[in-house]
Length: 135
Image: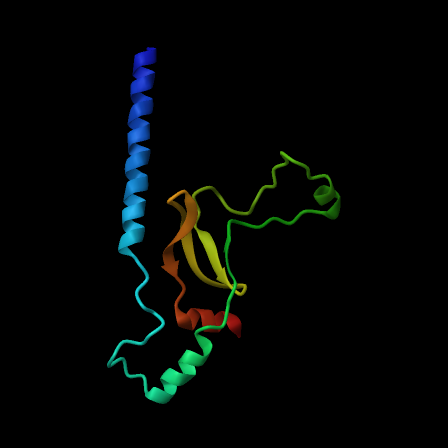
C-alpha cells in the first residue's frame, strides 16, 4: 500500500468521524429536554397532587455514570501509580450504568457534544423495576 492510499484512507476515516459527530450533535439537539417539570394540561393530576410534586422537584440528586467495577486487594491498591491499568468487569462497547443516588435508572453510551462528554440514554429502567430493586 502506498503512502497516497494510506492518506486517502485516513481522510475517509476523518470524514466518517466528522459525520458521526455531526450526527450525534443533531440527535442531541433534537432530543432537547421537554419541560418535564410541569405536567401537561389534562394529564390527570389534581392541583393538590401538583403542589406535592412541586415540593420535591427542586431536591438535588447525584447522577453518576458507571463504566465498570473491580475488586482488588489493599496491597495491589497501594501499588497503583501513574500509568497503572485496572481491569474492569465490563467488556468494551458494553453500555454504561446511569445511577441516581446509587440506584440504577438507565443504561447509556458516551457521546461527545461541543467538546464535552455526555451520555445518550439507550435503555431506561421502568419505574416498577426500580421500585422492585429498592425492596
